[in-house]
Image (cartoon, rainbow, N blue to C red):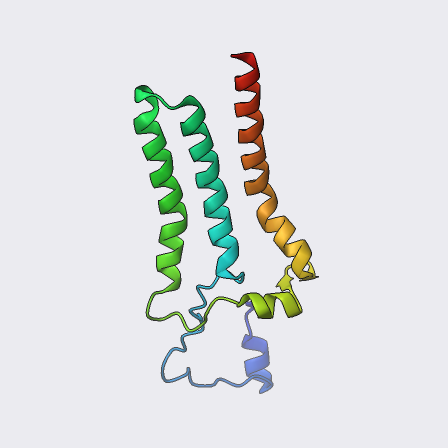
Length: 143
């Protein structure tokens, strides 16, 4: 918190020091997302699985371009961060599955067990695939 210190200077209670010679770089280049690469691959596989289900069930010439665009969005959404983690100033490596299985992962609310972390990471992609299977099944029964 900043405040004026003229009174402390006048009494001799404050001291003035020189600024550091060179500014310190306090930003650490940790571009790692904290989870094993397997979870990102599984998430991408689930998204492409959903896209494949929809293409197989409802694919026609009119949907070719939107499906390609969706695929490009998935590639960009996971490819750009993957490239970002491999930049030259990144000093860390992704956690291995072995380390993850032994210790879980630290979150803002505390340590999370490996099973719980895996459920939290993969629940949405798996629900999307299940939703796709349900849609294809309903469409098959209705047709």
